[in-house]
Image 1: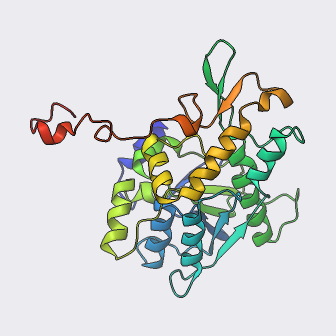
Image 2: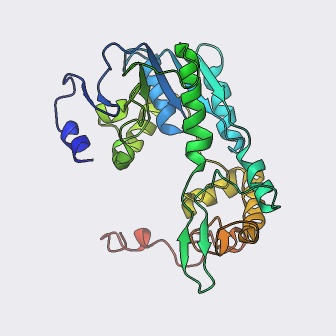
Length: 301
């Protein structure tokens, strides 16, 4: 990742640099297809709209949204809005590898081995808390998107594609730069326009507000274990149906180890407690007050 930080320190209009394996700073020369990886959250939405405003280019040929079948209603509404009217000058293709929720339900009933594992937290018999290796993103996001890219290029499965044919825009901002990296496919080159623009998530939100757009909700499955308590609280308060769905999945996976190779109880929340029992209240709601209002010196920061 040192290379990423070095590039961030260069001039904005520095010539494109591609390293073997598929990573680019700037447009990929000779690319036959430019695709925006659409999650419909803050960053990818900002990226798409900035392209529509002509602030980032060249214009993508399309965006691809991989539907896991388990997103909150707000995410589907965001995709529908982006597809409507004259919001974007390029189409959004929706792809799917099926329902991740259904796979989890079947695995909990012992009907399959849940190959597409979400990174659930696992508690051993001795009370130690670990995390399951994540496979869901690969199976339900990356693979369906790659399959669609092949289709758009006109290449059948397993047919060799020449190098650097696809430029893939990914909405990673400066506050999560450690997630940026090269594509695993030589024919596909990742590009991070928000990093090129030195934009953080907060910058993205400010850009949306400045241009009169609503700030979208977080794009993640309802039962994604990577949510913080703040995000769980927002989901609970703003989308009770999605939160109830997460609680149901959390209860369902508890004894999944009885049907597979996982040793220990599974949990969605990082505390290793049932989601329905986790205290998601704020400090003020717990009667601790707001230290920032009590002490203006900032000792509570």
